[in-house]
Length: 469
Image (cartoon, rainbow, N blue to C red; front, top):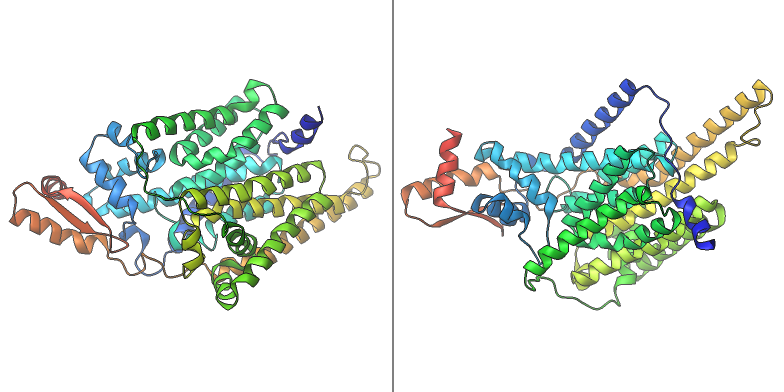
């Protein structure tokens, strides 16, 4: 009973919006478009729509051209399945060959926009203020480290869905439609990145707190996604490209990359690490712990429950991927904390979520002037409402002070796609080469980073080029 009483406040019912539905549709549509535009605008140099990134070309597009849809959906890469990227890359077949990078980049940006809108909606139970939820969404699309390798591609789209699955497990929708959406989000997340299984403790806590089956649709979706992963992993027959490493450097990396990185952004964190890495690690660890202490000391039962959840899941969702994927030594030598930043993204966004939930709680507490059920004199109620609005605005302003400088400083930066090569600059030469030597053979088209290539048969390349004309 005690365990259940601790856990239940973590899943507050999501209140319905009081705004008319036409206004809601306009708001979500505008937010969706804005996220797409911002995600694409953050790419410096050559636009993301003109460049094809890493595994998007080397693995997903190359295999989509060479094999059937069914074959690619059960194929493994690095020993596990990537359902969403392999589904999305099929869209490239709907357009001409020259537009493949555009289709992939737009799919990545649109995927992030969909996830952002879902997170905005799913967070309404724990973050009632729309302004604070807007900051949560902004924290995703403007995440400083995301500019290095996480935006406008398919290979890293599962890491955004990973964070959405975290909120889907916290969300408590009132109707079957919402429960179905939560289940699909968790299924796609787990079927695209098996490390989403690290959220299983949260799913178990939810099952204890809310034992009815209809309240656990998200957990069921997570389980089905992991079953898909198990089937792909067993079919891979032990294929694995990662080598596990020691764990001694992981706590320090967590402090610098997550505890400090969410506050100081990309460039500032890199500068502090170059100046004195141990200082960056210690300061980041202190900031991380300070947020947890503030949540436990200043929050109500709901905030304290989320604090315990983040205290467990954020380090877990950082340490296990870094260990399993062998990224620990690389994180100590990488020239920027943005490299391998995908491992820090979900823990960092969890921490930001806690900060915003705590800010919402504190602003509501300051604005509260009496028992919620007592309305008394109209002037008193109006005065309390004004104080509540002032408190909310103050909380939003303080969060902006913490977050916006990093967003502004790191909005655009150089990355592996900045210089290209552009897809359209390499494609004509490959087509001409195949037409000059039409015998059956393979041709490689250089993409970003320049060490990677899309490999196709000359027959397929010439056929697709002919379809364009």
